Amino acid sequence: MSPLLKVRDLSVRFGSSLVVADVSFEVEPGECLAIVGESGSGKSVTARTLLGLAGPGAHVEASVLDFSETNLLDASPRRLRSLRGREIGFVSQGALVALDPLLPVGREVADALRIHTSLGPRQRQERVVELLAESGVPEPSLRAAQRPDELSGGLRQRAVIASAIALRPRLLIADEPTTALDTTVQAGILDLLDRLRAEGTAILLISHDLAVVSRLASRVVVMEKGRIVESGQTGQVLESPQHPYTRRLIAAIPTDRPRGSRLTDAPATAVVRVPDETVLDADGLVRRFGSRLAVDDVSFTLRRGRTLGVVGESGSGKTTVARLVLGLEHPDSGSVSLLGRPWTTATERERRARRPRIGAIYQDALSSFDPRLTVGQILADALTRGRSRRADVSELLLQVGLDPALARRRPRLLSGGQQQRVAIARAIAPRPDILVCDEPVSSLDVSVQAQVLDLLDDLQRSHGLSYLFITHDLGVVRHMSDDVLVMRDGRVLESGATETVFGAPQQDYTRALIDAAPRIG
Image (cartoon, rainbow, N blue to C red; front, side, top):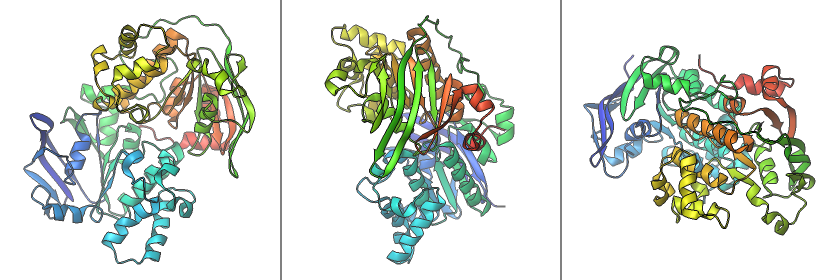
């Protein structure tokens, strides 16, 4: 079969910086080729170059850059625009910001149908609902009328996928298509992509999740610093990697790695002795939003120096529980005690002096920073009053493995891993007892994720921190947590020691979550 996409000797420069060098690969109809590598490896630039979207100032060279019968290197902007959407679909990794915040999601999905088809308004609307449902969006008619800010990150990701497949393109470029999705929805999206591939769609998959690559791709290309260092059949590359870089990527995967084991070569810090005491106690939490019961009679305790994982699908109530614990939402009934004293029943004035005792790390680190401030200003603002600001900022950066010189930079100039480390430094600046970690590594590639997870382990060992760790990644939660809660529709379905819950789940739902998680091999 003749390849649909041919790439030979592709190089991309920005000024004097060579970010992609001599990259070659082919993709046939009905085939999925995956490109993997760390942030900055050049995989996303390679993908965007195929669409003519390498970015301002990009200088692109290639001996061959062909899609079907079109030379992409010489194609006019008008020809490239005609290919996008109709012939080449694109799932952007930035689902949190990829959708127009002023438009209903359905309008965004319908745009491709409006531009490239003769469907009338009613037919377009019906097709939009079908596409959203096909992409795993519950209540698609309702969601089509909502704006992106009314949807979770996972729902926004599914809307982006619906838009990309609207015209059934011949080639689908999927850049981290399942990053923000929980286990069961991720499985559904992978099934959808696999069906499209079986129907003849060629898929170029960009992903840091090697389990997803194992599930979907027949061949894989591994990139490091803009160059291909290894390629071949997926099973061969992932099971018997030849290049040291590929071996490091695979070693960094937390799935099936025991609690407390290291994911990187960095040595572990010494363990401090902490008293065996309860630092957080939630009792019968209930939270309603209109007629919807978001949290329904949730109770748990968190002890000093331990990690309680919270897993469940989007909409299960995980993040609402986190907001109740942080005192950002007030429960309709039930209560939270912090360090043995009332927390949710206290007034905000009473809570203010105790807020430094509980901090938070969020999924989208960059959006949580004031863009006007430097890293040093962000950390200085978080420090407890009366401490030596400049010295403590340097100490915080060193604690999270960053050069103190970065204090002068603005967060947007840092890599994703550096931004997340700054977020962790900000969270530990007031010397809290508890950190609420809401999807803290879901947007990071596998090697940077490993570094951050080891860092969180080190901080827990050396500071006696307690973590409420919310994630959709079962491999991460099993590696990081001593105990786990499994939530669905606002309720706790199952709880207990992590290895007991994962090793012998009592609920069908828990078994379904575990079974749906992609694995290498």
